[in-house]
Image (cartoon, each protein chain N blue to C red):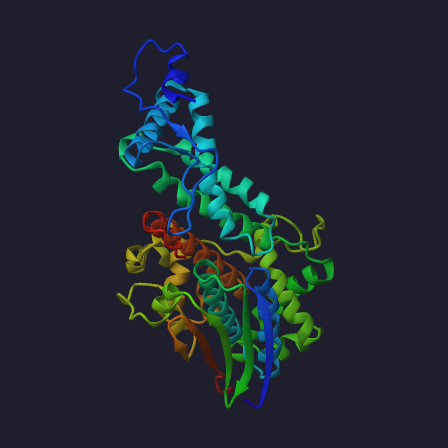
Length: 308
Length: 131
């Protein structure tokens, strides 16, 4: 197919930049020396291919040409397949990962900024990888927690809040088990299940009902600490920290730069220790994603794996 | 080590809960505090998330044991040169929260054993004396 003729046939009276030379579609993507597939449609050289990208991107973004968008998606599907293949051995169907990655590709095409002068491959790669990672994260952590464990989880929150000031230290698992009338194994399971709270409504009762006697999860989340604004905010200089909200930055600052334990942070900020734990994990996930996206453009150029 | 548990797990995120449960079980028997346990969880998660991103091995072994007054976790075998670099690199600045900084801040020690291309990581967390 000749992309030039194809798009001239759409009735645009303006010749929107000179389109590239005649493409020679190969149908399947080729694999470069780093093992990464190139877009399926190859032209006489890299420059020609980039020219076609830019031409199609301009068609889509300036003229709303949906066929140009579709052509870009088709051209870059081999890149999606290549990136999805890296994650295919991790328990998900390859086709599902390709579909998820394709969403990342479409987002990249839709959000592409023509004025920035970067290649679509450079911009799309971190978007595709990010979408796949998000899929793993969401699917991996969102599990249905049995009611008994949900109840124990909430009970543990209260028990921890009571034991820390009483013992003047963080309680052990055995002490928690005794205070919560549970076994140490049940306590560990409940702690593990707390991971799934990321996807539970903050207004939800721990029983999944709306009984007034039950505390909602939101009761375990404190209000904003005044120290957020007064702390020496050197953490904002740390790579990736700009993506975090003030409370997340503050909690990471307390844990990793001031050396406070999770229990001490809970006491300082006025939230439960388990919530501190979740916030730290979530913040570190965000940092990993952010740093991965910063590094990925280089990875696309060098053929190296994106770093987390 | 006087007492240890050895696992072999696939290189997937789904292995993390299993690893955490085993670490938690050993840690509970050793009477670690919740804070100490959460620190070990963080270290293990960060190490494995980095490995899942950078390393191409399909399975890892994890050995969790008690050594004197500490919990010791040995994980490997990793091959990634990038992961090796991140583990042995000196922190670029005190404000940088990279993998090695994070491990230093939540653990008492960690070490990289073996050579670039085939190495294991040993994480050690001391139990604090109880008052």
